[in-house]
Image 1 (spheres, rainbow over the protein chains, first blue to last red):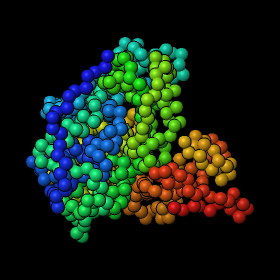
Image 2: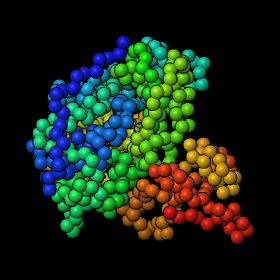
Image 3: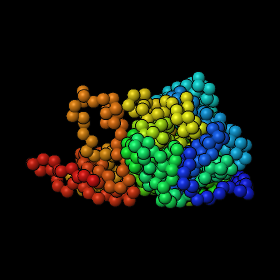
Image 4: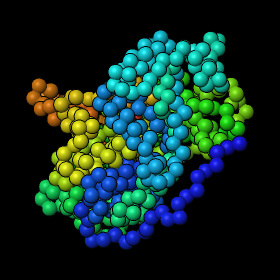
Length: 405
Length: 97
Ligand SMILES: Cc1cc2nc3c(=O)[nH]c(=O)nc-3n(C[C@H](O)[C@H](O)[C@H](O)COP(=O)(O)OP(=O)(O)OC[C@H]3O[C@@H](n4cnc5c(N)ncnc54)[C@H](O)[C@@H]3O)c2cc1C
Ligand SMILES: [Zn+2]
């Protein structure tokens, strides 16, 4: 008995040809590019905007992620940014007039070692001080909240407890993209698919447009939102980024009855699992260690995550894997994103979300739109500038990023 | 899964290796003289090539030695590994992209 998917609205978006120039050109029609276009129009009244996408709309990581949304990060800067996103998620379905099945079913981050327990309780305290909902559960409370988790003390890495963020959850990622695209289009934004950016138009130190597979397009400002391909693009502008691209993969099972009431993540044994609205178990794990752009991952990562999943959820033993796929994520040295202006005038950067940018989609668009419109970062993204790799003011979120990289 | 040829042990599967990132990144010759920006560049910025990429691997679960490989980061094909075992004359020559 799975959920009924919501009906789509009658009209989605136009497919216009590119104009000769725009006030703002956004490169990449993933969630972040689309949210940026939406908030440029909604918050700043800037509607002479094109979003250029080399493939099809939201066919990159937006289509490949496991849709987990939470804001229980450790550092104040990140918790503030992701919490801004979570508050926007709570109002967006109504604002965009499009149901994308945002389901606040909670997220458990399991602890299997004394160190995990210490890290988890510290993060719960930090979150509460920062106004983010968070609770610490012991093993019995974990079993109560999610009865299918194996909390026996006899497994190799017993569950000692978990953090719980009750307002966290999942959403239907494709619908999120389509909802943002539809509203951006309604404001007059041109969404142009099959249009690859291949270079930049320069006047001295300034960027004045982009070269594309559909000809040159002038732009007052150019905003990159190309996720795993950001350094390929930045190279074309002569800018070197502290970003490495890695394959990250996920898989789904066949459809099952509703058995899994929440989202469970385990950093230590390395798997995370939720149940999609239709009924598939959705699972992910860590990135492949090496750089890659091949949009597939190693098979041994799958074996590893399935072994962990089976120990934690013996009830999954007979579930079949239906599909596996990979995306290319852009990882920074401190596991935090880079959002802000660049040393090149009129060129803006939004990248480095790594394995966890879906949850940030609305806040990323909100602060990026502000940065592009005003030329200055919003207070929420000011700490996330490129200059932190010179000043050393890193935002080290490796622990709370929840996926090994 | 990659099949990687360790120059000392021969072909082994990826699980025996540890990845070391971009090859040929030299420690700064004059560390005292570096600006903050240059230190930032040395510590945090590496090439992120889409195509043939010279990188380091260590045969962590085998002979534990480091060596260089050129791998295509889209196809994952390994295009070059050092062919010579070390001799009295020294270590094998590094490969470059
Ligand atoms: C397997 C997997 C699981 C994940 N799970 C989660 C999760 O549970 N929760 C979470 O918060 N995050 C998760 N993520 C991360 C999340 O998907 C990304 O951080 C986020 O989607 C990145 O932003 P985006 O949506 O704009 O990127 P994308 O959707 O990748 O958008 C970038 C777009 O730019 C386009 N592009 C690139 N180069 C060019 C060019 N030259 N010209 C024109 N267009 C170009 C691409 O085609 C692409 O459509 C996961 C990622 C993967 C791969
Ligand atoms: Zn060896």
